[in-house]
Amino acid sequence: MKVEDEAARQFYLEEAAKCGWSSRQLDRQINSFFYQRILASKDKDSVASEIDTLDNHLASKKSIKKIEKEQMERLHRKAKAGKLMLDE
Image (cartoon, rainbow, N blue to C red; front, side, top):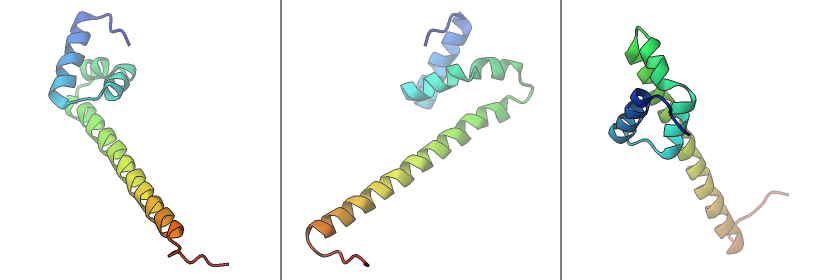
């Protein structure tokens, strides 16, 4: 995504480097007008904390998906080895 405003572009570059944003996170911040919301907000900390909350939520969802995938793989291995009994 292209950011026309030089100040906004610099802000996103610095924040991405400082916070270790992935390209997906950077796109999300740009598309949600994070820079403009920070400028317009009287309570800048609460706007900034939205990002942390969202990132923590997404990380939790990824962790849950990873656990589910591991459980399914374990069940698949047991079924393949004939060690899994299924109720009929």
